[in-house]
Length: 126
Image (cartoon, rainbow, N blue to C red; front, side, top):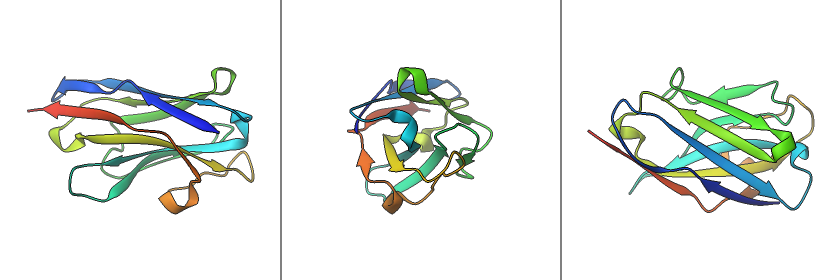
């Protein structure tokens, strides 16, 4: 499966962005999806994930309450709605997919994800 993330940009602190990741190639509903981010000089961190059926989601503590992950299997797209953005949210955001074993299967470890998009830059100014 090929993934293309888009929707990043420059936003002021307190603002919102919605990232999108469109998948192509294989049946999108076979995959659990996740978002990760990597700030300059830091490791790539988990942000959020969603099972293929959309029935289970996980969020990093750092974004819980501010971020919502969702998916539209008919459009082969996963979304990351980010609100109340902070300067520390500045990073390159990557979407990723993992082979799914059930409609509840969702992962938080980057090593579990076999497919990655190219990343989209999010910059939050103070």
